[in-house]
Length: 109
Image (tube, rainbow, N blue to C red; front, side, top):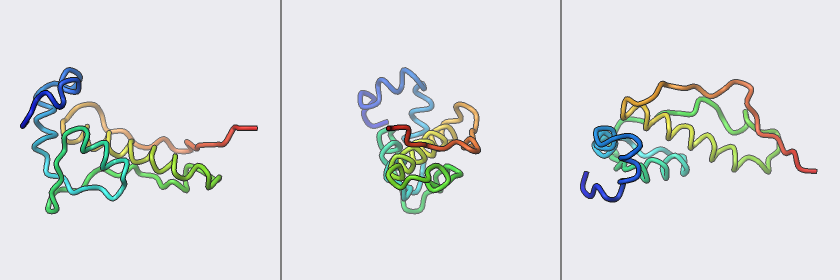
């Protein structure tokens, strides 16, 4: 890690070895903007020849019928994919899959 202060709070949660694993991971930047942002903030430096990142396992159209919620669905899936990528890169946690049938609905009047 170049500057341990940058990720000090994160190191307290996941530990130095896991943070080092993130910093040393050779991953290709995901196309999803939310996933890319999460991973960069976690300390991942992307490489064009790196390994692929985890996919969410669902499409935003699977989550919403209302097109007004499409951006929220994409962000949610991107965050999920980033967390799964972090878990895979660090060896922390258990692999999760997107819950079948989980949908975002507009409950506003």
